[in-house]
Amino acid sequence: MLGPHPIIVTAVSIIVVFAASIETTAREIHVAKTGDDTASGDCDSPYLTVNHASQVAEPGDMVVVHAGVYRESIHPARGGNDEKSRIVYKAADGEEVTIKGSERIDTWTREPSGVWSVDLPNEYFGDYNPYALKLSGPWLNYGKWHHRGEVYLDGRALAEKEMPPEVEATERSWHCQVDETTTTIRANFGSVDPNRTLTEINVRENLFMPTVTGLSYITVDGIAFYHAAPNWAPPTIELQPGAVGPRMGRAWIIQNCTVCDSRCVGIILGQSPGTDYDDIDAFGSHVVRSNVIRRCGQAGIAGQKGATRSVVSGNLIEDTNYKKEFGGWETAAIKFHQSVDATVSNNLIRGVYHQQQGAFGIWMDFGNQGTRLSGNLIYNTQAAAIFLEMNHGPALVDNNIVIGGGFRSNSENTVFAHNLLVDYDWAYSNDLGRQSRYYRPHTRILVGKKTGVPANDHWYNNLFVRRGLDKVKSREGFVSEDNVFLENAKPSTFGDKRSRVLEVKTGFAIEESPRGATVRFAVGDDLPLLAETKWVDAERVGVFPTVEQTIEDRDGRPIRVDIDFHGKKRKVPTVGPIRVLKPGVNEICWQLGE
Image 1 (cartoon, helix red, strand yellow):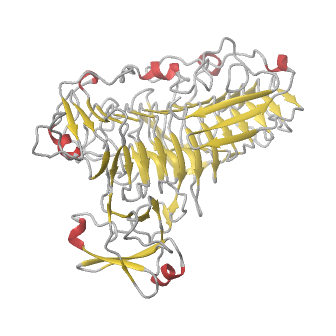
Image 2 (image 1 turned 45 degrees about the vertical axis):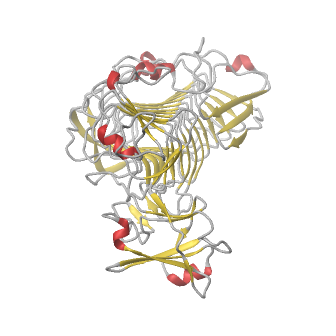
Image 3 (image 1 turned 180 degrees about the horizontal axis):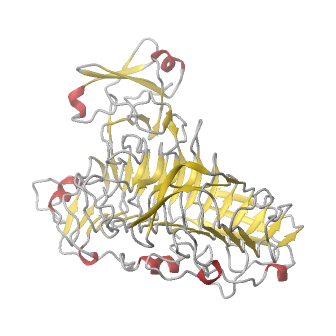
C-alpha cells in the first residue's frame, strides 16, 4: 500500500490536516447540470455552473458538483481563512464530474478532398482564441509554429499540421487559419463523420485558477479536467499558466483529480505578480496527491517558486509530450524551479518524450533547496529520469525505483539512500556560466549565489542492477558505502566501503497496468550479505557546506531514512527500497490510490 510516507506527513502536519473526511463546512452548495445559477444553490435547487458557485462560496463552504460535463472555466473569488475554514470543491460521492476547456463542434462541412472544415466567427472564442495564438516563450526550442488549441476526436487529440496539404495526406490531423473575422479549422478524420461522433475544439486557457493572486486554503477533490489550452510556461514569465493551479496561493489541496490533455502544463504551481517571494509563509505549502495527470504537452506538474514547502505525492503522471510536437528545456513529468523544502514522493512517472531536448522524469532546476525525492517509481523517460540542475542542496533521493534514464547533475550536496537503480547512468558536469541562489535553511532569505559544481554527493544502502558507479569520477566530498551491485554492476573507484558485488541474475522485470505497475527481481540466497548496514541519517551525513544544512524536514528536524518504498517502518537499516529482501523473487507494486 502506497501513500505519503509517515515522515513526510509529519513534516507537513503544520499546514494540512490529513483527516479521513473533508473538513466541517458552514454551507453546502450544490451544482448540477439540471440547475440554474439564479437558484438558491442548495441540494434541491442547485446552481448550473461551478464558476457561479465559486463566486458566492465563503470560507468554510463546500461546493458539491454532481455528475456531468461542465464546459467552463472556474475562477474562485476567494479562499478559506485557515485549515478549519477551507473552501472545498468536490465531486459528489460516486459521481463522475468533468470540467472541459473544449466545446463540441457538429457543423463540419466535407470538402471534395475528404477533409472536413468549419468556419467560426472569432467572437465565438470570446477574449481567448487559442487558434489565433501560437505557443511561445523562452526555451521552447522546436515546434514553435504550433497553436495553443487542439482538435479532439472521441477524446483523443489529433496532430496539428503546419501546411494545409499535409492535412489531406494525413489521417487524424488538422490545420487552422485565422483572419480578422473568422477562424477556419480543417481536419482529416479518416473514415469518421465528425458530425456523428464526439468532436471538440479548445476554447479556454485554464480550467481552475483564480484571476487574483494569493488565495489560500482551497481544496479540489475528485474532479476531472480536460482540454485546457495554456501557453508554454517557462520560469521567466510573470504569470505561469496551466490547466489547474493556485496562482501563488497557499495551502491548496488538489487530490483524486484527473488532469488530461493540457496543451502545455497540467497542474501549475507557478509564480504570479503580487507575491512576496522573500516571505516563505506567503505562498506554497500545497498538497498535490493521488491525481492522474496524462498527455500534457510540456509538463504534468511544474512551477517556479510555488512548490515551496509542498508535497507532491501518490500521483500517476504519464505520456508527457507523447506527440512530440513541440518542446525544449522545460519538458518533464515534474519540473520545479527555486522551491524550498519541496517533497516529491510515491509518484509513478512513465512516458516522457521529446524530439530534441528535455524529457526528464523529475527535474529540479535552478536554486531548489531542501529537496526530498522519496519512493517514486520512474521508467521510460527519453532523457534522464532525475535531473538536479544548479542546486546547492541538500537533496535527499531515497527509496526510489528508477529504471533506465539515469541521473544528470551540475548540483552539489545530494544523498542517495536505499534506491533500486536499474540500467542507470550517471552524468555530472560543471556549469560555470551561471549562478543560482541559496538561502538560510528553511527560509527564502537569500544568503548568496554560486556556480554549479558537483560535490559532496553520498551513496548509501542502494541496490544497483547492471550498471553501477564505476563511471562516476571522484569529486570533492563524494562518499559511497554499504551498496550492493548486482548483474555486472560495478562499485565506485572512490570508496564503497562494506559494499558488495554479487554474481546474481536478478531477472528484473516490470509489468504495467492502467493504474500502476509491478516490479519483480531476485537477489539470490545470500541474504546475510544484504542484511543490516548502518542508518542513513543526519548524523551520518553531516552538515553540508554552502547551505550549512543536513538532511532535515521543513521544520528543521533531522531525518532518519527509516521508512521504505511502501511507507513501512524499517526495524533495521537494510539495503534497497523495501525493508525486507527475501530469497527468490521480490515484488514491489505501485497502484494509484493504495
